[in-house]
Image 1 (spheres, rainbow, N blue to C red):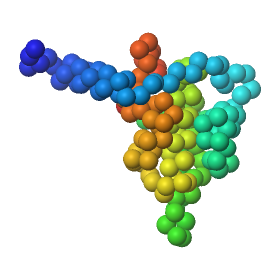
Image 2: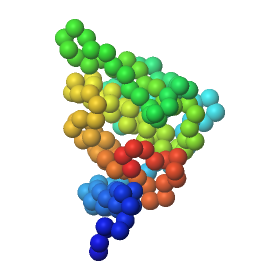
Image 3: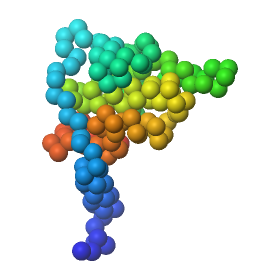
Image 4: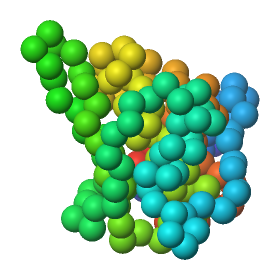
Length: 158
């Protein structure tokens, strides 16, 4: 089959599908459809719930809040560097204005919590090796996407 007649976007989409297929053969993708963020439930409550379920309560107690100014990302984990050069997690922010589904906000929060885990236990920033190992262990490997995902459930890695 020749791919020369395809546009750059079409070739890119075929490559993404191939990567997803490779990862599906290696990992079982997670899909958690329990309801989240019910009336009165805050992002902090979701953080506490996932911290117990996924991280055995090992992550630090940090502020977790919605931020209506986030535009380019769905979530952001912050840290500071102490005098010894160690990463110290400080907070998580989640985009407020987004069409959140239960499984997608859980995925985004898990992503940010993996950053906190990598900062706290491995002194690793960005999307490093330890970060992706933890994401994969939790059922969200790189290129994770659901077969029936809606456009609001896509991120830059899908």
